[in-house]
Image (tube, rainbow, N blue to C red):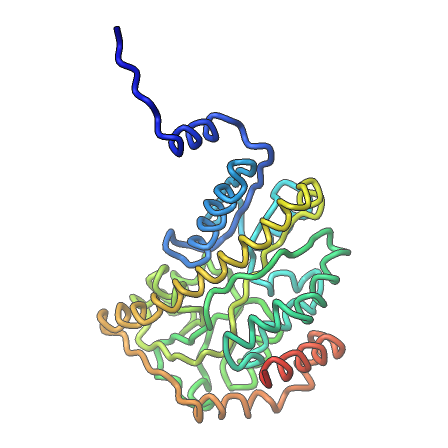
Length: 332
């Protein structure tokens, strides 16, 4: 007679849950490169936590690292319902509505706390209403850290240091205008072309969060990294409205709550990892310099000279709503 082993209740429940098909499935994609990228780690956290919290009712399928396309392509896939969720950089929505380039204005946010309060508050709601005509909705935000400048000419410590430097930027009008005003030669190009452009000296430098600089080994082809913290790199978490509406109300709430917890997890990861990124870069011989508050103030003062031009680029109404939200958050 065979001996029958009793399963522990918790294991039995897990086994039963795994044997049952999920009631709801969600597909989620991002274009961030690297398994250890905070965007990817946040996506994995979201998947695992949501599946656990819903007792297997929801299954999330991840498509990381650009498997489903670049940021713009991901937006289009969410619009047509091929994808349920995607996390592009918010500026990639600017071709549909220039208001979405507003969070990318250099030095618009004094720090992360203000940025997150603004994006998760009234200004975030304002942007969400503008998603409706595009066939999209937002369920929250992730971040990539602040953007920094790298180049092969000199350390960047003051606005004049950028004069004559050919720097790759994203194709964002506000970024291009600011770098032109600072005396640089901004050169928009696809991120996929950037490393070879730096290697072949097609451009002198670029600007990206530290995680992108490290994950893509840009320090191998750059002599200087300057911690300018000039742009808060915000990722908007987009959802297909019909996909969300097809979920029961309580699960919709769990999706949004889990996303907020994934953001908090991601911020902890970024805090812990960025000091290590600096050390890793320095160990290769690339020089890293941080800017003091006074030095950053000089950049802010220079950029303020074209405030009217920047406001016109994103829309006067949008600019006012954003500035008022920043002022309110900064006073809290």
